[in-house]
Image 1 (spheres, helix red, strand yellow):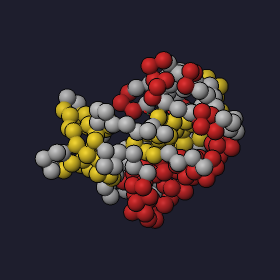
Image 2 (cartoon, protein in one colour):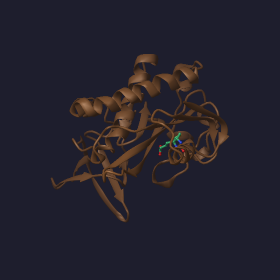
Image 3 (cartoon, helix red, strand yellow):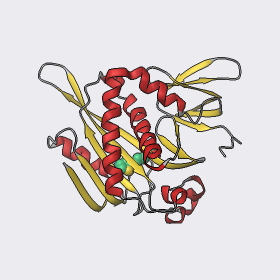
Image 4 (spheres, protein in one colour):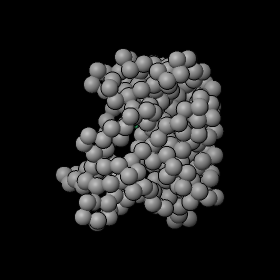
Length: 250
Ligand code: BTN
């Protein structure tokens, strides 16, 4: 089932309401534009017309501690579609940002809704929210983020059929999430090939603490490894991971 909206606040918000009403796994909510697109860390994800904004509801058959891997599998699905359909080769900034030539082209926000079962087991519905800058251009965005983002149009100089892109992305996401169950390590190994931060100087912020080091890639649990200059290694999850000062992505 695909629900299409013109201008709404957030497809993830609508998906959450639909889950409360018992919507089946596979439901897709899509909007032409959003006024309050939800981004990571409570930020608003700017969603002007021309982009692709959708939320896919899935009830994956995965242990709860593997749910964070769905963000990584979704990133991989985005890369696969951009490569196969448009010969573009983006990277992923752990855990959820897709970068093309040093600028963000898409973001992912997964939200888990836990459902306690009568048998005492808890299952989960996952809202997989994806926002991709497609047929828009940097000047469609607020001035302060213009230098940080890019769009597919800026790379391809051609209009992309958003219905077709949506169909390809949802199919690829379902396949990659299924693959997680069958061969999680293969998914993670492939993800590692696309790691934007690997070997680069990074700064990690969590609450009032920060940590500076070198990015060493993702672990089997989906956490990220950072090595400080003194050799001490840390595994991080949650918080914000940024490129260190002066890192040039071009
Ligand atoms: C990020 O970059 O911080 C994550 C952005 C995720 C945005 C998408 S747009 C479609 C879906 N609905 C939302 O409200 N957010 C996600």
